[in-house]
Amino acid sequence: MLVQSIQGSPQSAHVVVLGNEKGGSGKSTTALHIAVALLKAGQRVATIDLDSRQKSFTHYIENRRAWSERARIKLELPTHFVVDRAEGNLVEANEAEEFNNFAKAISSIEHTHDVVVIDTPGHDSYLMRLAHSMADTLVTPLNDSFVDFDVLATLDPTNFTVTGESHYSNMVREARRQRRLVDGKLTDWIVVRNRLATLGSRNKRLVGEGIAELGKRMGFRSVDGFAERVVYREFFPRGLTALDDLDEQTLGTRPNMSHVTAREEVIGLLNSLRLPMSENGKRRAAARAEWYSVMDQPLQVHDLLA
Image 1 (cartoon, rainbow, N blue to C red):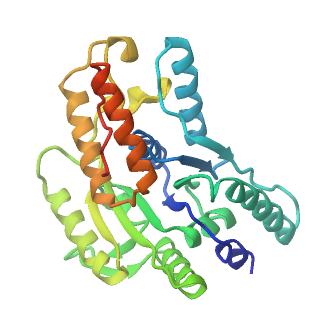
Image 2: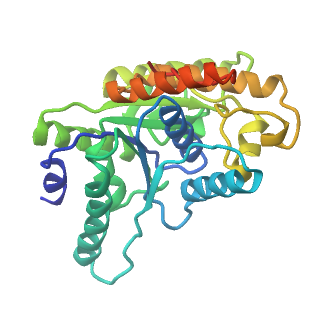
Image 3: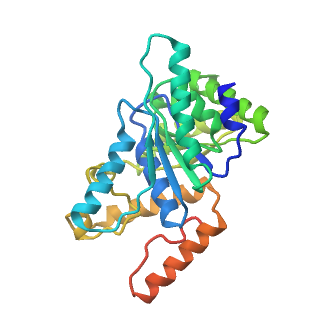
């Protein structure tokens, strides 16, 4: 009933949820790149961090705000919320408190923003399941290895064919079913293969085949995400993304080819997600692009998802 009361309300914002029960898959990095790309494309973006213990997403955004002020550079920032996890002794009371905190965040932004990006914790929880049931777009980053593939399915050790779905896959199936029953909408589920090897390998091929097979059974799309690059880890302390204007002032060092390749990688991923764009947002992006052209300053990603 709690899920239905949120989903049953008018909801203008498109909800993007980053979910995976395994940590270290790149959820927070992917979430901020999605948020910044949409901001640069003129969209009004809000972000919600449901991992109140780790707060990686929140720290990333805080780092971005702090560096923007310290370096006196313009860095786009979303409207951000953290929803704390209840720590009481009664499960029902905890879930009611978490729901109320989550509902307050959603209700304050759902009609004033175009997109809400939600980062979930790397473990099963009430808030995680609630967010999954609200997703218009569900993005599951997955490190390109059999260790991480285990979060989605089990494999036959002889021929590497899929033999069953995992707890997380079954949870997503149920969340999508609930969404369809409540408002008739379908959740677009995309599995993003992160930390891809730059060279082909047997592991890369077999993992890809397993994901493709499972995708047919579970109804998700798979796309290539971020390769294993040091630059993504270096972005975090300053809250930067591959989509920002990366120069010596912003980075503290001269950008190199790895930064250029990372940007191309991110743009390819974001285009593959096929996120909707509000017409007002497109007009805002076009107006900003025109202003930049008049000022003779290049705007790096003004029409990224147009």
